[in-house]
Image 1 (cartoon, rainbow, N blue to C red):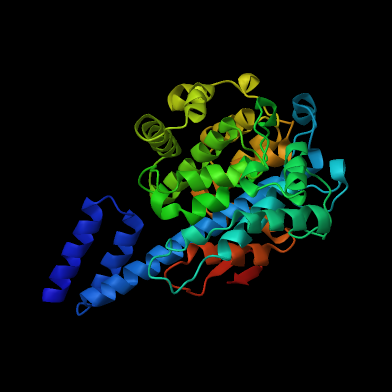
Image 2: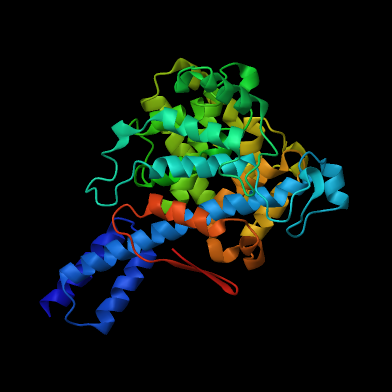
Length: 403
């Protein structure tokens, strides 16, 4: 039984390196079914399992974000007192922007444009899926943002009904010929949540790097992606913290939410102390003091959680909702019912809850009412399936999405 013995040793290696226990379970099941399985078969099984797992997590994150956004659209700018009297409990329509149920906002539109941009540079056949990074062209992403703002591309119904002032100014700067990385506002007043709301594709694109540590290899890409519309160090650091949390969820899916967030913020702070050279970024570390102490942060009362469009408030509110609930539905409804910038806080919280709990945790009727949801899933699959392009099926109630 040499193959079986080798295979069991292979599984032991996976366990000893703290790799995903779910994968090991599947490998052990394969061993039990086939005593003649070869090492080559196991490697193929591992690659397929890992690819499908990552694809599934990526789709869950993106769908979670879009659904959270859509839940918040009808009640955007309502205050917390109103939400306590009339809490959102299900997908609504119309309201603030007079849009049908399931309609997403600028948050998802710009996120989808970013997904599309990353897909422009992915070659599934590349042995090294990151070797194309030197070809990333930020002007191409700004072109997509401009197509969204001016022509309604990447919107549910081909028209724009909401856009942030800082984002609008950045795209207008680009229209006037400003270099892409200099388009975003850099004053302290330019720290809205407009880059945070669309940064999750970067977390998915760099998931291999984020899964273990935060290193200088990819952090500049996070900063640059933010800078297109929001160039202040505070917004850049918010994007880094959020993407690190998303990456940790993917890598450590078997840990608790608290353990995952602790790992992520610890990794960010280690990066700042060891590698960060930008004094403006370092000066913003204290801005996020409440997040560095996860245990103290998660027991804060709702009254001290702010739900404005300020990037720090949005990040804190989203992480707090994620930590203090035990389901996707509970997380996004809590986020939306904070009032204020409900669509963006719902989106940012929804991305975290989606990647953690999985798409099966999102109510089927919420997923199925989202316009163009299958196209969004397919865009996400391309980002995650960098090694093999397996057929994926996502079942949501009476609908099956074949990707």
